[in-house]
Image (tube, rainbow, N blue to C red; front, side):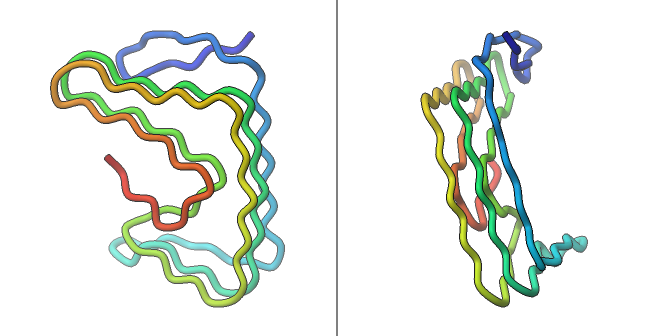
Length: 112
């Protein structure tokens, strides 16, 4: 069994997770301050069985991204198809000034 290491070093057991990523003719690049630029067709297929995202303590951030295209700004030219699937997803923030989030099949997902 695999374990996920959280922002505070807490290890959480995780059942096997499979993530598949396919980007055919897509060209993706992130330039400082420019976000994500994609030219051409893009296809992403992602599957995760069990995902646990936890921020514990004070001022911590925990984030899971499954089948996502993220950044400050996203500019897509051409067709985009995302097929994302997740089984059991648990997202928890415990304590002061913590943030925990799970993005599944998102485009332009912002950080905490």
